[in-house]
Amino acid sequence: MKRTRLKRRGGLGRSAEQLVWLASGLADSGSRVEDRYWDRQLSILLDRLLADDEEDTLNTALDHLFSAAPPAYDDLADYIESRAESAAGASPDHDILLIAAPILAWSRYRIPATSIPPAVLANLRVHLQAHILAHGANLALADFLFSPDQLPQGYCGTAEFARVLGTSALDNRDLRIETDGMPETTQFLSDTRYLLAAVAVPKGAAIFRWQETDGSREHALAQWRTQGGACLAPLLPGCAIDLVLPEAYFSASRAADKDSRPYSVRASVAFLGTALETPAANLRAVIAPFWDRHLEEYRISFTVRGEDQVVHGVVWPLLGAEDDTSDGTAQIEALLRECGVTDIVNLDHHFPLEYCEDCGTPLYPSPEGEVVHAEMPETQAEQMPRHLH
Image (cartoon, rainbow, N blue to C red; front, side, top):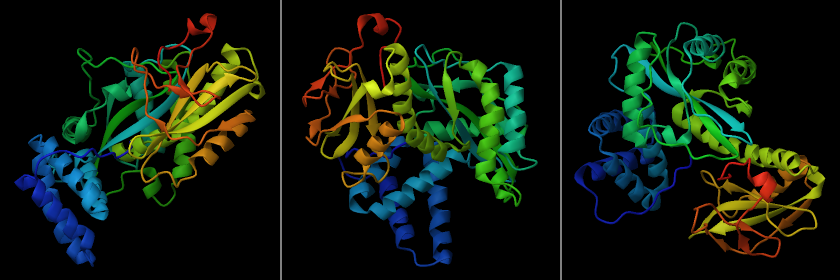
């Protein structure tokens, strides 16, 4: 998930000032010994703020450092995420970590966000412990496949969820998720679903299989895609899926954000080939940059070769440190060619971030350089999700 800051009005409160001072001290530290001092002070303060639901204080400090001291911003953001996902204080004898196992999916139909039956949960537990987690790690799985709209909200919400699920992990038991009142899921052609879990190990012990001498991330991911994918596929009927490596919650979420961009493009080309009964070579793609104060994203529209109507669109958001100096258009163009689309138009006009006033969906670039609504032909549109990535 991209770390994006929006400047807020007003001065810093006392706790925010202290966070800024501690993060700045850590960024300027010249030794590991000094690092440990700042680490202890930051951890104590952050644990208190997270427990007291001081979300605004955390964001105020981050907003200030984002423009005033980028290295300190990065350090503070890392520390907040680390304390939020580690269920600090749940056990003095264990390290606990909230992990996410993202699943990329696309379908012409509704992509489910659904409860996970006990038998499937038991199989997922076996494969996570065999291929992803270190030997002897305790595990708790949440029995729900979350959409992005249903994930814990904010750092404090994440910390509370990690504490509850982490407590279950200490007992090596899964957690039942109450679905009443859960937010509705926005429907996209391609989207991400999240299997959430917590791991508990003795203090200082390995958490993941690749921390052990005979393990590796590559082997863990290959086994998880094969074994875990077979367990998860029945929960997502009518969907093509791909699995992202399960790891720490925020890191896995960012990896899913990054991987979802090329996945959405590939899904779009595959979908249009089926829905319009046309090969990829008969499609035309239009790539254009969309700006607010800075470049925020590229939008890719598709037309049938020789026609001007935009039938589909994909948003390619910038992530992390990416900006207008990155090679986004080259990356997108290479991906389109890999998918078989050879008719590609690059527009270099600075388009504003515009959305449809009626339905809120993004507007996409036409070959003529206008921003328009993506509209499938009526017969195909009847079977499509309303919103598209």
